[in-house]
Length: 234
Image 1 (cartoon, one colour):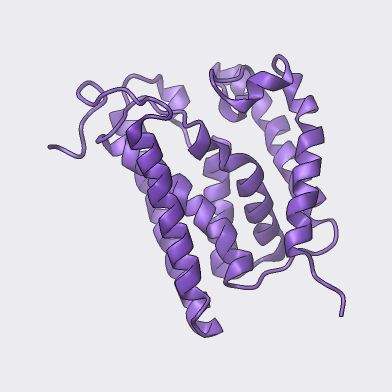
Image 2 (spheres, rainbow, N blue to C red):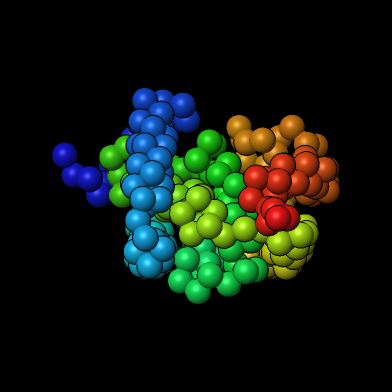
């Protein structure tokens, strides 16, 4: 069977179907196995694996972006640009894994575990298994999750005071900047114009007001995540 079916041939993606659950299970096993194995390496080897992971991550991002542009003709070209929040997180994770920049590590960890992980739970996919889009989506989002966990679990990154709030500020800045882009292109990057069906955004009111009501649970979740990776006083 052709693993790179076009959108016309591949079956439609169905949330919580067997392929969806299988993909989630593989992501969980891959994340657990990689983190467990790398924690037993020396720090030099951990850093090298992190850079390799970042390189694979960047390559996957480029391949997925190219694939969306040239293959997914069911979407208008405006909707195929690499302007989604997860696209931004891909680049941030690459910077964090390669350069260990404090701000990038913080945004990667907090941004992925509060927002990007929702993509695995409620994917915005048209083509199902075994299309190229299906594999690219779960590989890309799985790598996001692995990268975010790799920073504290393997590279021993620790958050500075208020890193969670700074990360939230940068994520909110993305939303503010993408709103005029969405108006100009008639798109929905960052979901600032409407909530996709079946996503958690539907429970927080209508657009764009849910961007404000979401700040409260986001603050609580970010603070809880911060407590797990904060710098502990001796």
